Length: 354
Image (cartoon, rainbow, N blue to C red; front, side, top):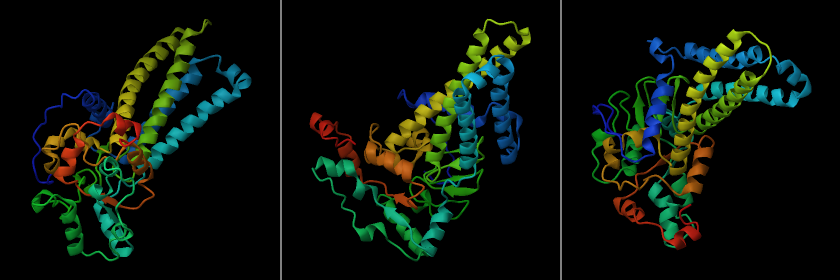
């Protein structure tokens, strides 16, 4: 993340095929289907809109399908599971919307009140160790529990140690919060706070997606995608019924199905993209602005600096909200260049890439 004060020029999309569907899907979902009608993005209003959309699409299923009464009596498990999925999706939505992404001010308070854990990615790099045949982490217990009392000076010194030598302090000092930003942090102008491992600000949730709630966001879009697929199937089944019904029901069903499929396409793209960045330990902001982030410039294209292997990445992604605050250091350039080498067959067989 570059300095918050730096003006970020428009970037050219990478020619890597994986980035590109995401830009469309993120723009669609986070600007929103109706986002342009809302000049002031009220969190309460947006959440009510999302709830209303669920009521509309799910409620239409029961209005348009005349056989649902029969199915409720004959196949209660089927409609029951569908109802449970609707409920779980809404609960997950509000749970994610009300969660904290992890703010810099929070980790500073945690350091002052109790302790914060700072992990050097280079020291914990499983890939580097496994290539040398060493599967044990060299990180000592003392490294995993560095401080019990945090002052602004000690915080600044800790953050300096996370950056490559020779980095300019102006690049990581937020001009809005006046705090020293750890790597992967960015100031969100909507939240008016610096967010750890900033991914993006989701308009529909009314909050940022960051280190502490990225996994919750992934589960939400997973459930939402499954719900959209199931609802689309119910619409298709109702349209295929060979029964007498009002013409307007078929017309409304076709319109809603078309909109639902349109939403589903972007949800699938969004789910695939966030699954990809979870596996590789990246963020949306890092993928989109890779060439603008000062400590990622010059990093080989195929190298993901903060990745520690698929298994460890997924573990960290799923358990980050329970593990406290973990700040990752930027690996040294020598390690990044070593990672650029292709894995051998032996590396793959021994699962050293994981």
